[in-house]
Image 1 (cartoon, helix red, strand yellow):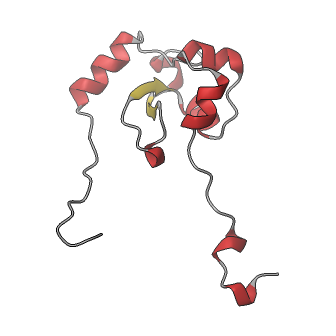
Image 2: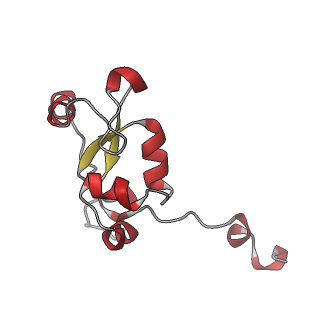
Image 3: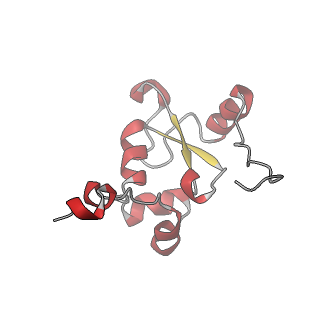
Length: 109
């Protein structure tokens, strides 16, 4: 960070805002359609990954959230979210580097 430059603040979602978002979706996971009651809890998923600057949220069950973040969502599931495969490729989280990449150059195989 350069002197005099302000640090970006993360936007937070209030409980009221999150409840309104869930209510709009009928308290259901947008990918599989299961209700919050049947899955236990709906989690806040980012349309665009937070690592890529995303700030919009939508409700997903834990299974679908993991699938979405791992890049394993099917075309049908993406259609339910209103996202095409091409757009999805740009929105998904950045992949973490392999452990090998973190090793000092002298220790690399």
